[in-house]
Length: 151
Image 1: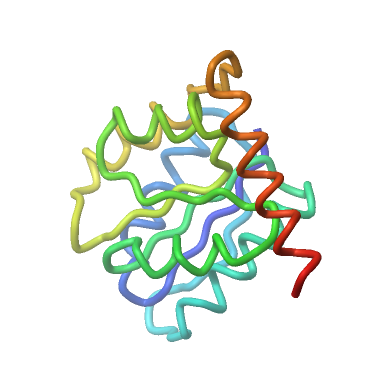
Image 2: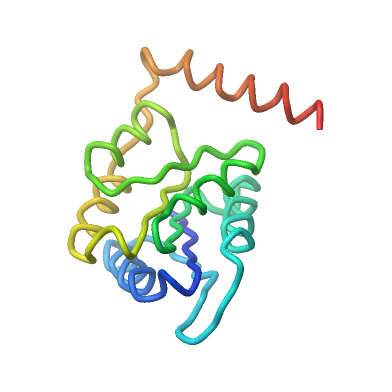
């Protein structure tokens, strides 16, 4: 799978750990930064990653900051994106299986690196199951398209 990953200055260490972990699982990873000592307004990273996923260049995205909250809010502003904060396995799995999320966000101040790896592995191994969730995701897409046209 093609994965894009990025962070702000509050998530550099966890981003590097997750990047290396995802690579070790055989996925292709593009790192959009940051590196130690750099700084950025986190919405710029979230937007960049969300646009790369929305374009189809990447299948999924991982964004790390202090809490994951602002990154998810920002990524969800990009049309066609469904992003979620997830710090536990059940939520990570359900974000894919029930909601077909393409982006997961996490907070380095919230989760330890070993727990984060477990959550990311569950997320990467999950697939959208459709079924009873399909009409709900289709409605999300319909709402997204409705308001995209009104902007």
